[in-house]
Image (cartoon, rainbow, N blue to C red; front, side, top):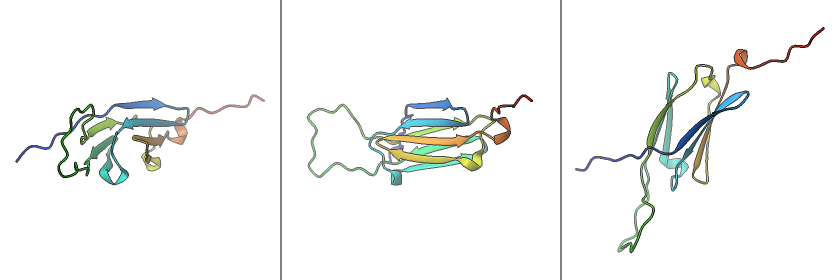
Length: 111
């Protein structure tokens, strides 16, 4: 029995004024093939591609291999985990988590 292999996907965590956004490249992966979990401040992603080559398929050359992906990311302390949302479109998983309200910048009116 062979051990299951996972690749680490390309991922970027960026900061917006009111939220954090994680973008992960998952080529060839559908929504039903991805699992996203959070435990504490750690976000964990695993995918399991269901793609099967057609019977008799014999590639002449390949530049892309279907793969399973796995990664984890520690979310910033200021993240409000109750606001986590995720969307998978065109091979890009976008995860957004708002900052806790008390940590967002506020304008103060001068009297």
